[in-house]
Image (cartoon, rainbow, N blue to C red; front, side, top):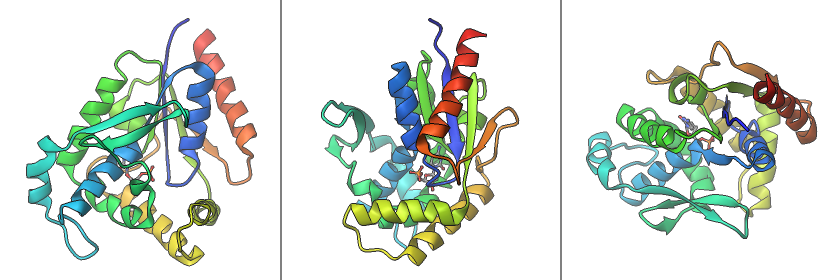
Length: 229
Ligand code: DC
């Protein structure tokens, strides 16, 4: 059967990764969470004192980029790939609110984007891939057969994110999470390099009042149309 490329873009905490994982599993495709890659570089920068709330050593980070090796390694017990930086598993460490607060600063750097986009294009060269992020349908795979753009109200998204963080045992307030979601929306849509925009040929799905099953069904219908038409 022919294989396609599925690009899933949208605002933070719209449930892109949950949906992308479900679709990839259903189709037997590779799933790539590009947000984890930006988070991986951010984590590295934090560990090497290159970034904090008050500070960014952009030139220092750019100089060290060639020595940052990002890899996804499949964990059969979990059923998905985990993020590694220089052979260390950082899957848990990149999901904290501290990383979320700093990642937009790092994702603005063109040299970082160029490195990650190249790696993403390489991973998708044989198609059969579901990739989620902010610039997948616009920059990484402008020729993707299916492009989805996901939105939901910022309150709905903050509530989902808040529940996720509390479940993981992190101490955060709803207001803090909402502020982070709104700040990231602003930075993601206003940065000079590859801002978050809906590709002209992307299909928009607002899942504020949709169940996970409903959105999965909608997207699988679209996939079937692309596969059989
Ligand atoms: O999807 P996420 O929340 O894990 O992404 C983390 C950050 O990385 C997000 O605030 C924006 C950035 N990002 C990006 O600029 N381009 C991508 N393709 C994916 C994520």
